[in-house]
Image 1: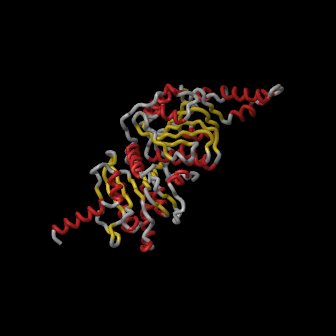
Image 2: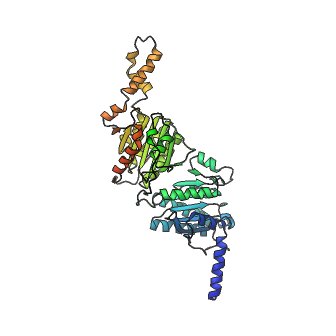
Image 3: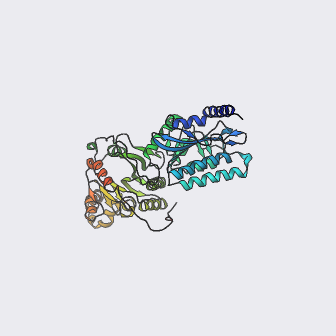
Length: 452
């Protein structure tokens, strides 16, 4: 074959690829002109391989990505596709760069039989080995069912468009973006394809490139006026005041709503934020626990706001406690309201291995709910009461302001400081700066055996 024929064949192949859905999506994800494809001429049977893969920059951040190409055999998984994705994962492992996977596939090439199963297994194994080494983001823009859904769901963060489907049910009867979000599998639901891609571009700027590179430092944009904070401020008002302007990106909003989790910039540096509110059910505990482990894997500091009364699930409470205590990343806690018994121990106190714990003056720190503790410990105060109902209410309030006061906890060293609400941002920043150089060496073991 002549050089002219070779060049013509190459140009034809590239032009064909650039017109494909997968190529268009991956080119939109990367900065203009930065995408470089790998294995662009690889074949799966008579067709080109059903995935586009390569590297480039996303908002200036070097990264790898692959996009299943639904224009070729519906994006069906094959041995060739698996080999191409596995090569991308191995490059990410060698170079320490994040990976974005764009999913849109009708399933697997059934004609390959056992080879197809081996292909799925190779990708799942490689993705799991890469977990905790570099950030992985799944972007689901079409069908992602069966084993492909397991691979996508194993990523650190899952983003879906309104056309995305994510389910292990191969009948395709379930798995909409809203359903996946309610189950806690999907972290972000975007309106359309472009919005979903834009969300991934923002996420990449907030994440470190790998587990050794540390939290990204960005241009600080300031924050809302913390003078507006009061004892009655809701959690989103608190987050708006503490985080840099418009930087808080909430994750898993529709799942475990008693826990609010997300990534933010605080004083220009990426920080994980957890807010525990009200009664913490199983979903809220699982949501917070996984987020803390994610932050710890990439050494992102965690700021926790606590205003919660109790757990409803022993197993999930144990999971949350284990994740906090095992995490060696920097941890700052602010008690803005209630922190009773197990909640304090699991998320705010020594059991959580917090580096620095602060409390607002109105906070209630108690080994038991004040309603229980006051009546149990001070029941003799009600002897001979003419109006036991009203006297019980006064007794509970007295217990809150005396025995359950944060000042008592601070006197015993259970809380490092009492701060005013309007001081929260500046004190959180000071604490994060103080622990920014934290280094901890763990015991020689493979991992803890926690409740799953």
